[in-house]
Image (cartoon, rainbow, N blue to C red; front, side, top):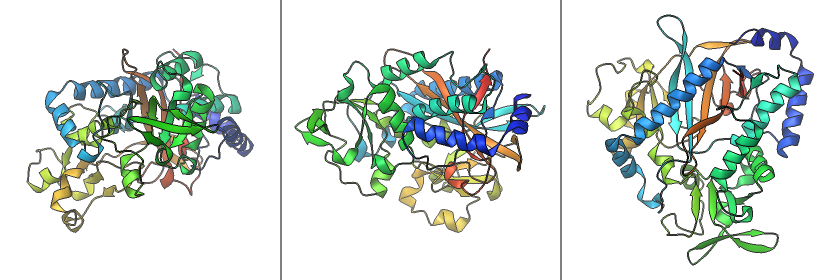
Length: 404
């Protein structure tokens, strides 16, 4: 990718440095890293990072400024999970891109998907710094976007996650957090912001209040940094002590409704050169297919709208597989143009693909801004870290770029 950083890194790399990186990550996050960490960071130019950051912001605003889309998105929120008091805008956005070559041969970003849900903002800050310091990389490289440094980055996260509340009244809420692979991320918020991580099934409801146990006391929850994913709640049949539809005396940092309102569901509504063609499966069966949509099934992906980590994605689905989806559920699936991403990261195991996630925060009274990114390197069909466990020089990584 970006030279001379790539060649210099590859020539100086050692297994001992990688071992030191893993050890440091576990020390700094107070948790075992149970997903694969890539041996290398992803070096990108400042121009490429800026293009992806601005494109993600443009796509988000395109949706929010489309009344027809916003109504359709509101209707898409399942009745059982319609939480009162939805915020005017999402507090968090993630936008994933792969890299393709345009007609001139230039690398350009192509949208994979976008989601109004928080990602690993804490862990990525630790990881970017760890790559630079453990490997002794150029100090001019940065991993934080928007001109942020350590102080301003965490001040902004505090503003979004904690707000005006005392930290003991703010919790990070997750499903069985001690079993989540993102547990290292939770530890970083605990250390930097002082918020407690709690299991959604172990809070207590008293009237319109939610409480959690801390140091032998039950403390009122005034603001929730929400990390609980609805499809996991249903998959695990979690017995909740409250109903999502309850009118509770809590604020949400990352209101649950936005998980549904900006997701894969939005892809057919977007119009941008960076967006692949997409159509809802029920529209596909009804023949409402645009003229440019791929005719060959091998060039199509089938995606469930509400799933994480690549669960349920099918490449080149057959007629039989499509017909097996009940008619009443077809609106919950997406048929999408399959994009061939360039393998551009040079590694000892050959050229490797990189999927880049731009991560944004949007504080109340503020503006949507990109603050950090992550990379996932892989050489298979799927880019998620769970799909690249038995290879080397693949997995979760950080984007490093020269400061301008």
